Length: 443
Image (cartoon, rainbow, N blue to C red; front, top):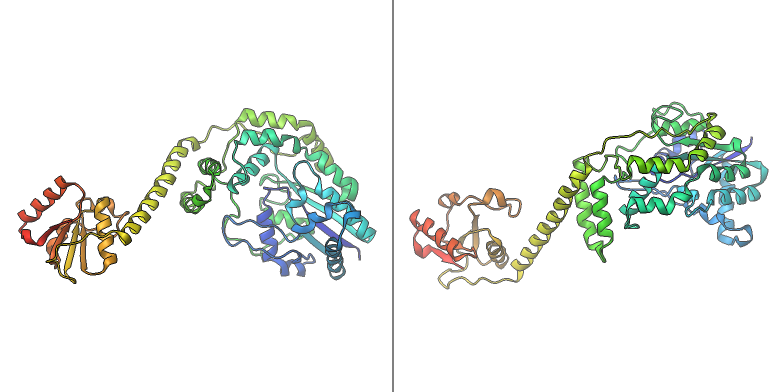
């Protein structure tokens, strides 16, 4: 029986991570059905929503160099592939790195070298999903910004990379090596899958596996694109030197955005006119794709539709304020906690160690007094009160209303506010309420 080596080459941002996670999770079941997805370069399963996959053959790109430059490592890699083919009739290797960048057709070079080394005893087939050029570049830009690899606008990215999106020319070069009949070209669009709206079912149809009810799937979206405001925040942060210190806070904010479902909304950074201009550049190339691989005299991609502008612009300023406001609050709380460890607010000598204290006032100074007394641990703190307690609960979760004073046991009330005028008003309130002046302390 002939041996078949399937190379799934991407392209990037066509559900590759999701497919690779799916293949990894169902490795044994796939093998039972006649397709082996081996652990060739490690097995990195996606464990979180923002995770990505590198596939089971990310080192295959090392085989793109000229044959005369092959060293022992590359030769050993080919030998491993030969061993896999000796055991199974259908081997599937996946890595979107083979798609190549900067116009370099790595898949074509890899296929040419493997064809020479493996000979006619192995049939090579290439599986590739293509995404309409405007959507593809926009999504790749989104990913680069998310990974801190790009700081400029989407429009600038398109200008720099538009010359690298001639799919027809790239695929023709690969087809010249392995034969057009061995090219499996698919469109990455739920309305254009050849087998339903499920990309996993569509992918497995290549191997004539139609029933996927027994296959496991991830319970969350893998490597989603960021929404418009999140990308803009991240792009600006990427321009700030040493912005890694903000990464943790940004990740926290992404969780907030995910809970609000903003992160999963398809962002739109290019206008209708910009998209139209991009697609006009590839009109002839895309029509050639349609003729060569889909049997139609038109582009195989979904037509461009003019959509109303989304409301993302309105959310950008809100999200920026939320992000930096949350960051400021976090940093302010940490500074207060540090002050609590180093500040000292000495109390009168009459306040003996172990005295029961209530701290009144939760302004910045009052919070420092509270944390300082807690860390000093010389007294029993039985309450922390402020008239704005309800509004300040997010800052100090232990706050209570001043009225609780009359339900608590205490020896002294410590007025901790910074303003002398406010301190006098608090003292007057307490004395008017029947608390003796000797039990009221001002620090």
